[in-house]
Length: 101
Image 1 (spheres, rainbow, N blue to C red):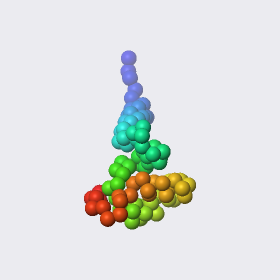
Image 2: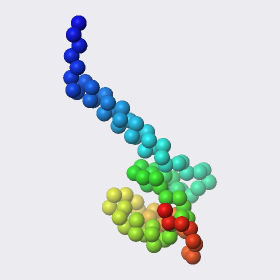
Image 3: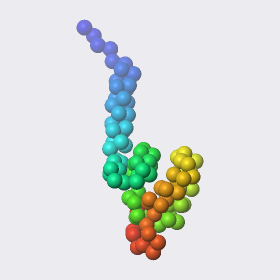
């Protein structure tokens, strides 16, 4: 019995496994918001965490976050109230010396 192996019969299953692995890794990178966290924390985990590791709250200045948000607004569709809540949730207190990551 002769087995014929085609390019597609090998490539398609490999691509499927790689795609599933990438999705699993991406989903696992964003930690779940704690139950007592504000509602915007869940939005941050799911929306920000779907593309990159979301920033830790209170580790960025308001100016740094505003700059980053200006680049994200065309990709991430949040209401103006949600953007403001996200800024308030993530921004370090004024005068904080939190490190910028």
